[in-house]
Image (cartoon, rainbow, N blue to C red; front, top):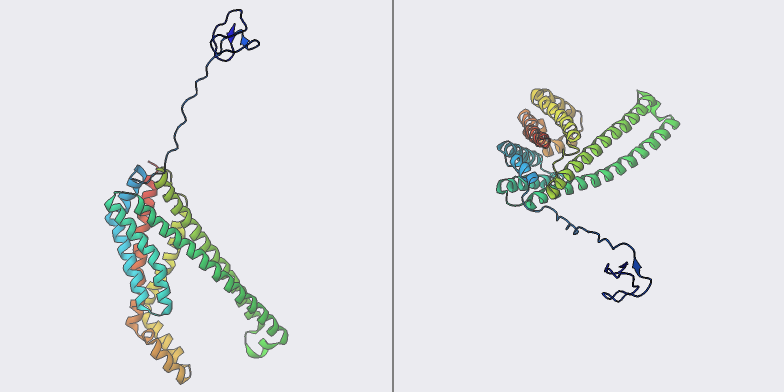
Length: 311
């Protein structure tokens, strides 16, 4: 017989001399000790150099990435100051976040001492996306309010027969205009939401890869690339159109100017005189192309990095 507490052989006795257990506490088989492995400590988040951050730094510190961010920075700043206004100041403040993030990421990649600066650059990108979504929400609300009053105004005017007198095209044309307004509004809103969502997925994926040293393809890169290419393609076509057809554009603007009252002609000439100069129009078309070329190079580097995570 064995003690049920300490496992000592007590023979036929019901009392254990080893631990002092009394009658009714003995068993016929010895107690088997169960091995419990020591608890594994929780691994801390990766904050120093790791394999993932080294892979990221090899792309973010490349000459190709440097060319991309130089072109993006020069194109953005030139475009802002070329059409300087109060709105340009707001654009500059908003553009400062991604530009700072790009250069912070490049600096971290060249120093390659710690991932803290890299994480900080991802945080700036994330803040930019969140601010963009907030501004988008405000814009959506404003456009919906405008659309609501537009529909109400058109409905009242149609009911009162105003279009029959004021517009040669009639009410049908105006209702088509309202429908086009809402279609364009829905398309642009969907596009911008998809853009920022894919961008946030991409940034969060890179952040997690750095923090946990996790080699997985970054989600959102393909969608972000497609949506950015659409915007860059449309913008590049518009810029090329301004360069090629600058003379026709200026003539069209002058024709519109001559149709205005004299006091409005004077106002527009003094305030927006550069719009009536062919050279200015060609420069206005050429400057954004610098940003578009830099963005295209950046997308190449981004997709090469994402492709490398498969290996």
